[in-house]
Length: 229
Ligand code: DX5
Ligand code: ZN
Image 1 (cartoon, rainbow, N blue to C red):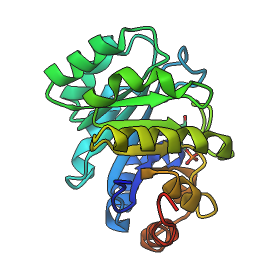
Image 2 (tube, rainbow, N blue to C red):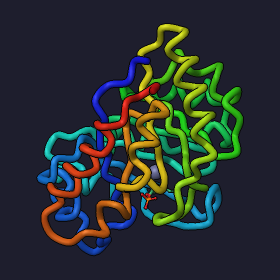
Image 3 (cartoon, helix red, strand yellow):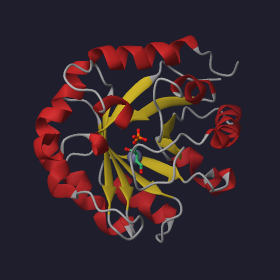
Image 4 (cartoon, rainbow, N blue to C red):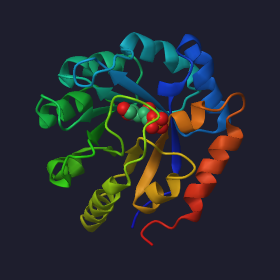
C-alpha cells in the first residue's frame, strides 16, 4: 500500500464567491496542500460555477500551492488550453464525458499540465483501468458531482480500495483523490481506503476565520487511520 501523508485539498465551492481571493488565502494560511476548483457548465452537471477567467484570477492568491481544476463539463477537450493558460497545475476531467479520454490526456500533456481522471460514484473501476499508467491523479467521487455539502457515499469505498490495490500491484505511483462529503467524520475511512488527496469543501468553508485548526484536525483524523488496515 503506497499511500503517502494525507493531503488536504481545499475546494472553494462552498467559499464566499464574492471574496474568492481572500477565501483561497484562508486555505493557504490554514495549511491546505492544494486548491481544488469545481468547474461546472450546466450541462455535464446541472449547476454552473465559473470558468477559466475566475481560475486565472484566483491563481495569484494560491501562494504557490498546486491548483487543481476539476472539470465537470461536457467536451473537456475544448477547455484544456484555457485552464492550462489560467495556471492550473492539474486538469481533472471525467471518464464519463463525451470526449475520448486518450485524446484529453494527450491534450493536457501537450499543455504541460498534470492530468487527473475523475470517476463518478456509479462508474465501474474498469472504466479507469486503461488510463491508470497515464495520469497523475485518480479522483474518486464520493458524491454525485454538482453540489457541495452532500452526504459521503461510503458504498464507493470498496471500489476505491480495489483501485488502490490494483495501482499498487502494477507498481504505479498514482495517488487517489477523494471528492465529496469528506469531513471530520468521514476522512479516516476515505484515507484508510487508499485516498491520499482529500478534497474538502463545506467541511472547511463552513468555518469562519482561521482555518488552521480545521485543517490540522482533518489531517489528524486521517493520520490516525492506517491505510490498508
Ligand atoms: C462536487 C465537487 C466537490 C465539492 C465537495 O461536485 O466536485 O469538489 O466541492 O464539496 P463537499 O466537501 O462540501 O462535499
Ligand atoms: Zn470537485
